[in-house]
Length: 253
Ligand code: PGA
Image (tube, rainbow, N blue to C red; front, side, top):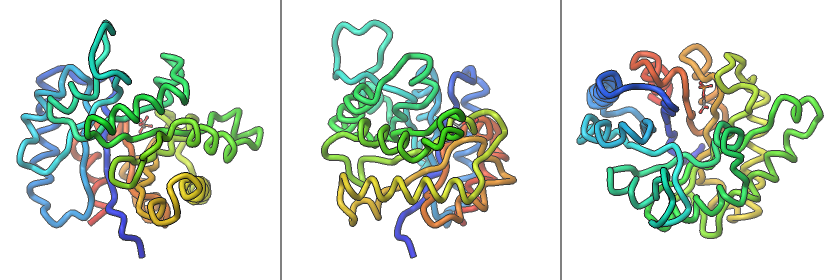
């Protein structure tokens, strides 16, 4: 029905020192190599410190590497920041942008996420743009309007199915063990696709991948990934163990 190839993306967040990170990446690469017919793209987003090592560990396996954030500028006086070109230079193909932890910890706004996504595109990276409502917003019946507004504010001009992936991550499901029900996920994913169509056109919106993120685990991944408008997952906790991450990816067989 859908021509969208799922994406299974691991977001390691601020976890892993060198030895464990390299072992984890090598473990995922070995699984990928042993499973050539797997019908999804597999991505690892380690912390900046491990991007080089992880890129080496997965080389030739088909596993892609991404950053967890980038700056909106190509270079310059921005102490502590990392430009999209630097990520690309290390072997990244993707970058996660606007994750709710960055929106909270670093007060990132939609406008900043949009500027970063435009810069990521210019550097040849695929931007994974995250949106999602808090529990208070869901309880207040604002879920759809919050997601629509974040999407509208964060999606740059020129976004298309090749350079952009959307991740719907309800904030109340991230790291909490409380996962969205299939009905809740499908409702928001279908809604997001409709909103995308207004911005990029129906054809492009139909091709664009929308990932679910928030306590996706081996036990609940199958039913989420099978939903018509869910095109894979952005996985935090369960991406830190080869077996768990791979059990999720295997749902795309
Ligand atoms: P989680 O994180 O799988 O640990 O809930 C998902 C994410 O924040 O990307």
